[in-house]
Length: 88
Image (cartoon, rainbow, N blue to C red; front, side):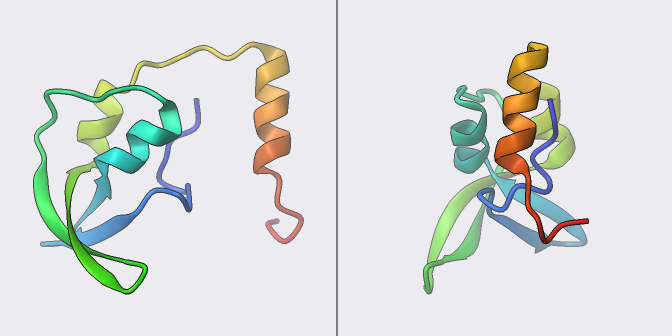
């Protein structure tokens, strides 16, 4: 499964030289609950409003995501959904 680093739907913030990702956004993306993560609460600007959001590093989140194997058909569907004609 592709990682979430390049997903525009996952909010991120730089803090002390490291990128932190919104846990809630990753949970929504993969449709699974991530528990027992080492996380911190960081302020993120969401629609012009600063909100405190639980965040974790890529490595922390990636280690907890169930690596779901997609069928060839589902891989092609995902590739089609992710396709962007402006991206080369």
